Image 1 (cartoon, rainbow, N blue to C red):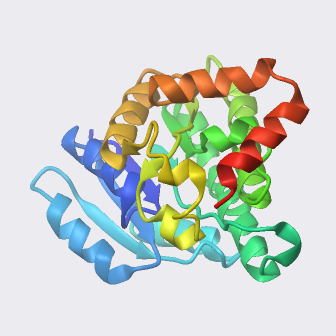
Image 2: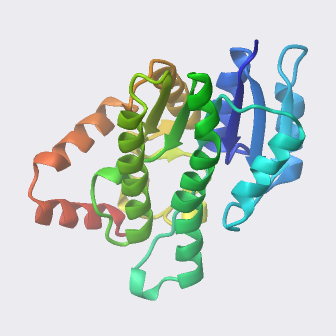
Length: 258
């Protein structure tokens, strides 16, 4: 019997590429994002005689959205075997001067909705002893991020949460994976208003969304708890663990400056 993957933030970037990975292997899809027209376009691209695709337009900044998504899958009699929490966004700039509502929406999307969806779909996976949760974090999860403070903090939360539930799920047949990409060529930078920061302008270690998705997908299928695509990103994530925190903060700020 075919498995079903529910993917948030599926209308572009890493989420779209992950949808292609699952479809290629014959998984049915539930695609979630705000842009219903774009989702419909992707659904027509990925739908086949062996792959069904359901589209759910939802804004995860709304606290009720995860429950509405669950209601929609239940109404369609769709069981979710794989949950991919990919939706998320960032915002550059000084925290004291940032737009508070945008920061709060970011926390809702990047953390609260992710936890909410995981809690809604995980019990059924455990009951059947099969399935997995793939949470898209970031190499930002490994250090604080001056001038992008809330985004970095949300990704640290995602990494910690995923590691914790992965251990809770050990020997249940269900896995939890945190995908931690570094700089990736997507629309993320434009939305976060960080196109001109050093980290982005340097182009060092920048990977395509397809590369990140393929590596993350393979790691997820292998049951890995943490997947860091790219050698430079792996080295960077390890280096911050052995460096003085004061140095890590200063370096992170330099990379975030314009």
